[in-house]
Image (cartoon, one colour):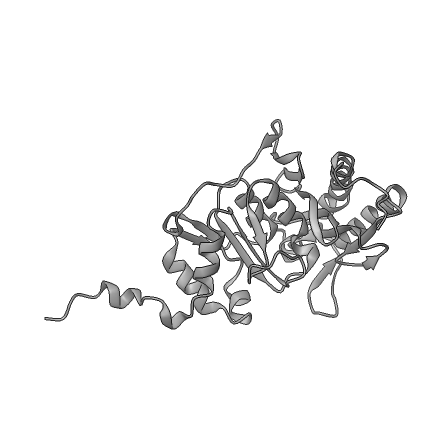
Length: 282
């Protein structure tokens, strides 16, 4: 396929993605915790707010003006244009938090080339935080101070690992509850920080693993791009390098194989901690 823009030059794409994040913040933050927030149910029974819709519309307008040759995949308005270079947008990741006034939500913007997330920007304006990355340009984070480079941890043992599992119900519905329980017994610490924030903590070296199920490309593309550029590894739950696997397993890279082995070991083969800790019979 003849390319209209060099894949190796992602600086202009990253600059655009950061401007898109500014536009998203301008739409979403004024509606956060608004008394007149409009909330409705989509066909899949998930919630959508007027802020979700307005934010994605604003980003699509900018992309259609500045990147008319690129495609767009957004959570609220579907797919349009070419899939070779595709902007993948989640206008508000964590809508349930947004509508309840919990500040753990953000906009996810990614440019995927042939299904691989290359550029990623995550903005969480209610927390005053933003993360971004692109090939060869590093992974970065900012708060109120100057941007700083980020990198995954170098923790090399599951015994020392901290993990985020998103939610017990999600793992139960996916048929992996036993694996989650076994994982919690194996690692140092487990918490459900939730949504995109977990991936950003991984990219900053504060966690070693994030995993979840029933996800679409727009739920993970930006996070995958940032985790990868920060030195980590992000795949589907089975280890396949894809955005379309409807699951995600992101790690610091060093422990990716160990997490895969742990999570896919049959529960019957795992040691029983209660039996291990019980006193020996006389």
